[in-house]
Image (cartoon, rainbow, N blue to C red; front, side):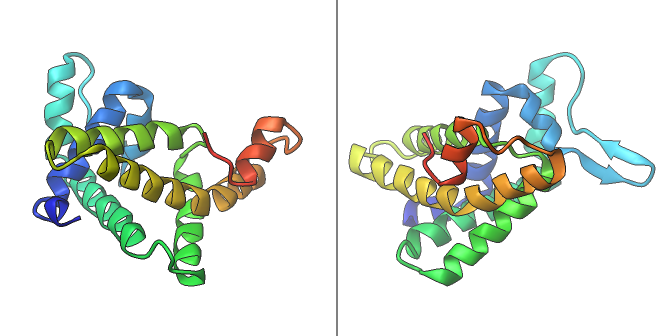
Length: 173
């Protein structure tokens, strides 16, 4: 973790940029509410301009730093018991309201491990990458039940599909 602490904002922004590059529609989850509507910090057009705006978007930087702190919190408290579980359960509820979907977890895990691998080589050896992947899996498994419950509550999701039952029980791919 020490090698990440030096610039959480930078690492977090790079993490989110990887996600946006792999799955551009996720950018819409980061719309900023302003009086009279929403501002999307993205240009319509040149992808290089979109990335530039993302890199300077204050709300994204803020969220990226908070995200990296929460991942660190999870790494430092893997055996944290009910307090850490409650914290991440609340985050599942909150993120469902912003439109985070079950399938986003796999993308986020991959982007986190890839960010660490690229930015911290050679310190990011296979054991380090596996540990970070496990930390993310722990976070996802604590967020998943409440995220799913909120989607059921707000979207009238059919709870009987195999995928949703598997997701709700915390078995993420």
